[in-house]
Length: 326
Ligand code: DGY
Image (cartoon, rainbow, N blue to C red; front, top):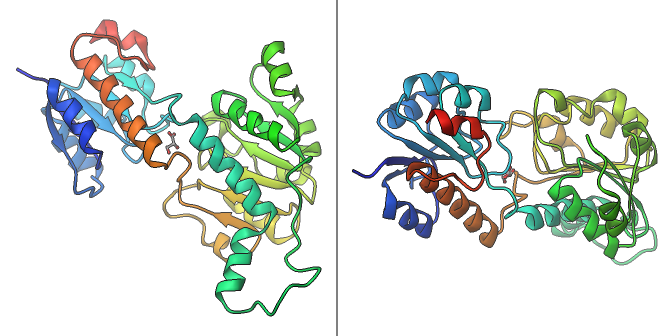
């Protein structure tokens, strides 16, 4: 008998075709978000779940789904999954690292450029019919080229952002849990500094740390005050890493110049205070959203699930200890 898998949100046809070769597949192709109760109900007889970052895979759910062997997230971030609970119950958890690094780095750069050059404000102005003609001081922005870029979180995606910065001739400083090997620092022309030095020196502060209790409100009122009044903050990693209410205050009172945000606390219900501000560029968690990348993420998740359900080791297994219990 084939193992049973639930795909919690709409995926691509090729993802379903791949899964169906090895599994009996039930898919929510109508893409109606499942409540925790509906998710538990539909997973009760399944061995696998291909889930998204909007699904909570926690102890309550695992308790109700004793047959579950694998939770395969279609995302690199996995703060929606309680890894310890999965491990305790012998449920393998997987994510999709690597395939989205370039697209996510591109979006971080898009936000840097858009905030620095006031792109959404300029577009709103022209669409509103306010443009009367060229003038010297119109919509003055700041330069990205030759500016100082401070990256907090220098994992794979942070390093790809630093690589992009070389083309803009930026000075790159970074802060990370562990300092990079010196050959990587040399290749990226990136200098390791303390978090406080980074906040004090950077023209652009880009956050690329995962969300975890230790990174909750990593940037709050105190950190925003350490930034230059001319600085721009980019959050394209996870909501909750920034204290959004503190950021709104800082943007209102000129503590920093601007912000570019792809992610929010409590998304999709984000703080409405952002909508009143011109100096913030807002996009709805689209960091990895190119067709090629989202296809690659879904297929990576499908491959992880099939490997786990056919006795193999998923390529992106987050909790190897769970496999021995499975
Ligand atoms: C991830 O993979 O964690 C991204 O946020 C999804 O777009």
